[in-house]
Image 1: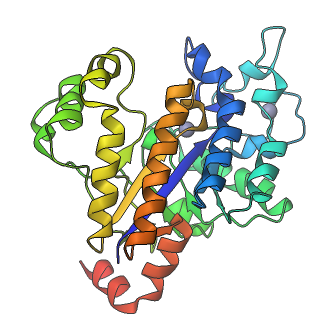
Image 2 (image 1 turned 30 degrees about the vertical axis):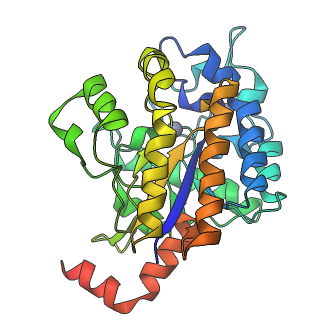
Length: 315
Ligand SMILES: [Zn+2]
Ligand SMILES: [Zn+2]
């Protein structure tokens, strides 16, 4: 029995604060995109794993975080006249909206302040501080995150996650399809038009006992000019890819793991893309044995299966 997993990198402005010039449309879409996505998931009864940046759970802060071992300047965007507005640094109301949704979502972690754990400059001390601070705030609100999403998908310090009680993380997408011999836009174009379907993935248990739930498809990795050129010809290429992945999962035992940021829902066509994909998930779920799982569900299933767990840890 195959399944679909949806994971969401929920971060408001934190996903961009280390960038020279953050994309204004994406930053502005942080809040409306969050609520739009929640409402779509409700419409189609699709539970998702929301990996939330821990800082969003603070009610306020003075922008200094003196106890945090972050590099100098890491919190500069929280101070001074040019600082990022409060409603893009805090989001307790948005996390409450996840929890009060009709669908039973899973709240996971996306660090405390979007430090890239897989960056070689990120020390173990910093990784530990990011994980500990995000968990402390979550626990204070009665949340118990077990799923972790790495900023920029750069995997690192998995031992720290295991030590703090996480059970799973989103790993990188395995290379797949004709496009793997090409690079960058050419690869994306090939995959979107003629290539193999995006991969189904097999969750595995790593050497720390964590379940790796690799990504299959980023739902907004084909934007801008290429999308505008291809879409009138073959329709939305990501919808096409997502349908192929969902159909493949409906016919097999694999996991089709899609992901996005709420701030990817910049325009109406982005909302429509999500609506079409979620409607297809819902339809196949009714017609076939296909299930929808959260990352937490996948981890529980894999860790409960002694054969799977044992085999993977030996292999
Ligand atoms: Zn702060
Ligand atoms: Zn992120």
